[in-house]
Length: 296
Image (tube, rainbow, N blue to C red; front, top):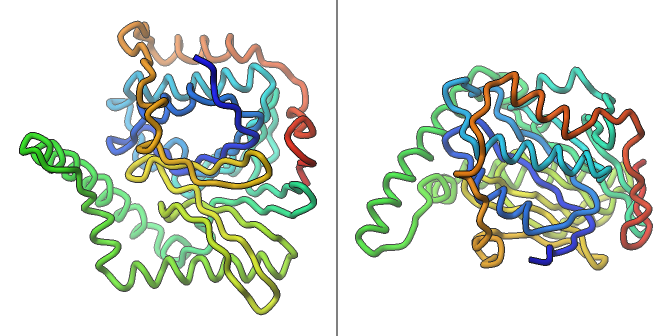
């Protein structure tokens, strides 16, 4: 199968290591595309809720696929979020074409693009981290309940429902928080002369134009792989929201889960390092993409 070529892919909030993560669907998506650059915009591995007792093979297969991209010298930028914040201490770490950075500034076809996770603008995260962690556990529990509800609903011939989406949409405070989050981000982006700003964190995929006092900013959010199963793609000089549920090609991909050998932690690390081959070269150059794209 010929893979779909994409200039830039932005993924966030995959939450690998949690029950709510749709790792199989994420892997199918990754296997369906041929990206020239990948931005992992936070909460990729959920270290907050990580447990040795729960790490399915599909989650490891996603990591291996990403390592495979690095081994091919495809630029991969990892921007840690709040759930994998411990990686922020490794800011500017570089291994092969992988680079860890707290934020990323790109110039794409002459336009400045600012990419960061977004939790810095979350008041709860800044002042009540314990409450945020408690909320994460509650959210993960709600996702588990939602899966059970959907199983029953499908058995009865009904469609799937998203309990968390319904709760968010019905609670005015949640809607107000999202709108304030987007407005705050765009105000700061306009102050710093960015035309585009890309976030994750709030699990709300979006592309929309926001007018601020300092100018117009195009706000984008890559969504998540818990509920929405979305990503941002840049191709043919334009940005778009990818939706797995609308992609029959990715859904048809066989990931050969049963053929994957069982590995312990040491074997997993050894195979990853062997695949990566620990190349100490600089991150790949983005100049090969459509138009002029460079890390700033």
